[in-house]
Image (cartoon, rainbow, N blue to C red; front, side):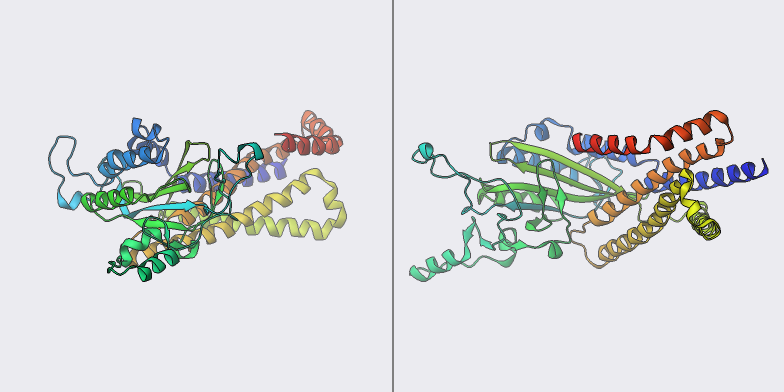
Length: 408
């Protein structure tokens, strides 16, 4: 009985530590920040009516820019200069600039057309894939640079050479140059590269940029996805928001809207949380040492117990959480360094992605810690019978689980 009480107290203390760390990592205000961003940029008529490229331009001009670069307050007074970095809700701070990134397919790639329709339909655009993605650097209006050079050589009149800044939206950059990662949208898995344009830091100049892109047909029938990316910071909660709004252009003439809003805590040091993280590491070392001694003492007999076999993946999860916390911290520090070095676009996606993975592992640990309390009831006859039934039905449960995941 004394051993049961000691084990129960140990599990309860570990559960309290892991729940505290998990809740702090997500933040109390993450849900409300997510809802605020959704209401500001997505819950409107313009966004829901994006079915063509014109609809996308309308949303950027009437919703995106006015909310990212507010000029007047709700009381129709001018926004002070020191508050121009806040978005229209007045609480979230705009971090870095806004970026539009486009992924395209090459015009030479064509889908198969039935023989009887080839005389009527000469061309057929393909869906996006990594093999047919267009990675060429183009000139304004999606004119290949080789064609433009030949045209200049064949004409007698002088042609003005566009500025490098004007050619940036037409020049392909890979994922390393754009500090982006692959993104799984509603329809496809997209690469981190593309044709990107970083908007200016005020509403008037940003609107001029978008107007220029619209006039030169930056979006056309070969566009397959447009990423609208920006980052926000909420000072009261110390949470950063990585906002990625993906507009996927299908080959059948519609646009799929797929927004993703991720929160990550980069700042903030709470003594309670530091203490809990230190206790967590001590718990992990204790559990590893305890199970190691049991394996050395019992040998193969150790693995004949169902609950002992459960303990191994539980320890693996604990160690994985420590490793993921280190990776997450490294990416967060890298983002903060880039934020301090430059004032352009700063991508928080990698840090937010690793933070999400870390949160998922913590969630699994919380569930497993609660489930481990079943082991404390093994002295009860009914629980012993339940354990016996599960042990006898292991093969059937494994087969059912495999079929379940294959079908669903």
